[in-house]
Image (cartoon, rainbow, N blue to C red; front, side):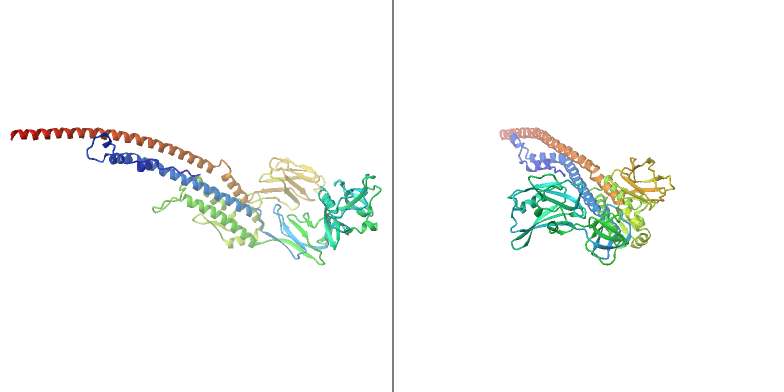
Length: 575
């Protein structure tokens, strides 16, 4: 924060009453000694004081400007975060029946697939009707006090419970309302069940119980009296408020929606899933099934030059904005100009040079050869700003569209399509690492692997990195996979964000400079205080000197008066 230092000496001199110090001593030469003393004191002190205040103002301006640089870096980092992970690939679907959404955390490659949707996944839904009000008592028999819930599937009337989901129950009394029951069901944890009260007509309400999506999430609901608490298959079940036997007409009448899996074809292959959000078919995208279809739907992703250029333009704009601000602040001035508030500051100039170097700094670990920002037509102009040669951009992008990821996306990739590699967590480090696979059956299967010269851990067919550089790297090698290289690349945007964070981290170089300038201002304040004291000492010295002078002048004047009187008397005696 900038510090303000008051021009204490000049203020004191201005506000001080113009006392005639010599007259106060009953001596006088006719000179305005008060004005003379003030003028002499100010001539001796004010130049020093003005110089200090100029230095204080300069430090205050520097502190304010350094704070502005930090604010600019904060905005820069925020805007880069928006551009990070943006891809030059766009996704599309030929029908609203399927929505294709890219996953920003996974590398996306171009693809085209054909799909048809025959069935959407549905949740098992039961309805318990014929209640006259929303707060009707759940069961009028008065002998049910427990309802047990299970989740699983049915084979005929045999319930196959999902043992990963525990049986749960709610309590019922002869005063428990259907609203109470709905609340208790909604409070059950881990079952995926939900309940609501639905008005189906005038004075007609139903308790609706719904499970999660899929054929394996069907509901087992058994109401039992106090004499029976043996769990599944217990006797004395109250059929009117139970669903345990799908073939029983009383039970079957309660089912309004059968829980089913989604069924669809993917490039002619029949597939089922317990959900309508498919995330495990195409790496890097989610396929959401919205409706059934009677004909093929084409889903795909492709590189888009316009989108890539828009992203690059936004990136160049951010770099230019930050660079211009810092350049103006460090401008040395020309033709008598004052220059910028941080003129010649070597720290800020080093930041400017860091931004200037991005067009010629290699972006490594995306493929065998490094990638440069200049490959995409980004050039540094004479004034240091960046510009884009759109013709050069278009030419390079058409030939090397996958290289664009090096600008915006951190990536873990394999040098061969038969080797699938993913990264989890954040412990692995950027680099290019050799992968060596061991096989005893002519590379049909693999029993061991090394990465970064360290043996990998094999778990359930997945090789896992086990060196300091590769922790979190997972590799699946298909039949016939060769030895290859694994590329772990940090994008240009990631590098610049790391640079921004180094500028903004507490205790950084800018903070150190601000702290130094603040300490210097404190020292200047002390100097001004000393000058104030020195000014009073100097004033006292001048007053003393002028008092002595006035005393002497007064003495000379009295001697003159005596001689004048003597001469006048002498003249009178002669006459």
